[in-house]
Length: 100
Image (spheres, rainbow, N blue to C red):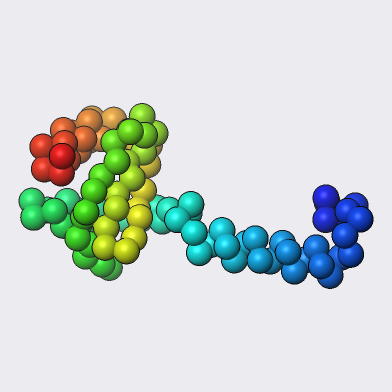
């Protein structure tokens, strides 16, 4: 709506908007969520239904809502409400021992 009411011409506004969207997609702001079954291995590996990742680091600072997992060239997020509370607490204990 703001684009339509701007003093900037519509074509220029759409070009700038598309450049912003491309920049946002290419940046590290967007994090891929984990889908389906996830298995954390003892050798700092993460297995999903279709891919194997080598875990570099896990950020626990946002653990009240999610875990951010940094892998080879990817950032993944595991939302707290995606598994049961009991399993989430066990997972944090396991990961703190394995990945700290």
